[in-house]
Length: 313
Image (cartoon, rainbow, N blue to C red; front, side, top):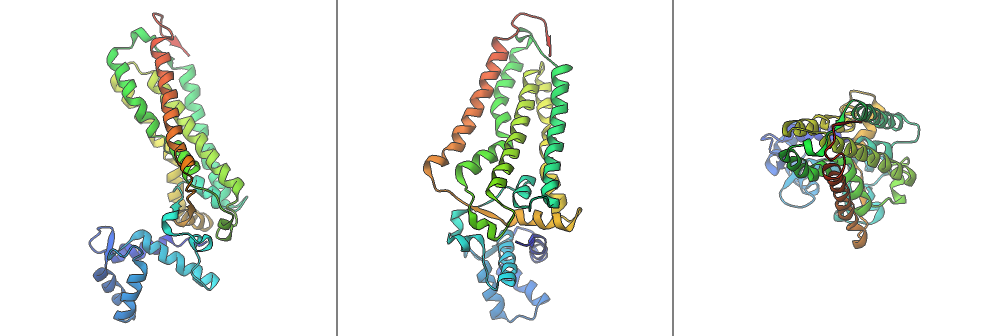
């Protein structure tokens, strides 16, 4: 699998004159006539072949798909994708998450991308551990009767927000509920083994769970409405470190090897499992996570340290 997203995006950005995120047939024709010697008929045929849903427009993803198909055709003598290998339609496939854990999944064992993803994971985890140590040594949980009702109301209203912003956690729930690993993936990415599929999702889950723990702790330690919001928002930048690392690699700021794998992440899709019982698992897990955080809030708000002094932790 080749990293072709940069070339595809470059073509799309040059051709998308009105910057509306879609290429009309006229825009595509003007671009092709400026940069190629193709006939009108060939240009129209190419447009129709790239317009996968036949809506009269070409999206950025459709351009990427066309580039990927061409590159694979150059390598294999045919336009093979994972959908072709599995004999599935596009609606039976789902794009993988655009993060560094997907880089780990696709990377060959002990390659640059493999160690890069592990490094980013432990960087995030290390920072979370440092914050947790500070919260539980310097910070404190206030006595519940010293917390104003307005602050308690704010905490309660922020609980579902707290759960819903844990992108890594929710993504893990979605993947296991709706997608599946297939051995045929190895034909496109030899390093994308089943063990690494589960390992990548385990790292993603630990990442999300750790952030949920820290955010919940900050919420429970709040004594003012504004501090509840500020503390809650302060760490959100930290959760995007893995995405920033991925984009740095994809944009060519690091090594060519990392750029290649980061580009592959943008193009790889996994088959859906079409198991109705499994597909409700993500909703159940999300609801369970919210209920657990709600129970923690009720315990700390109404049952722990009632009528006492502020307890240092």
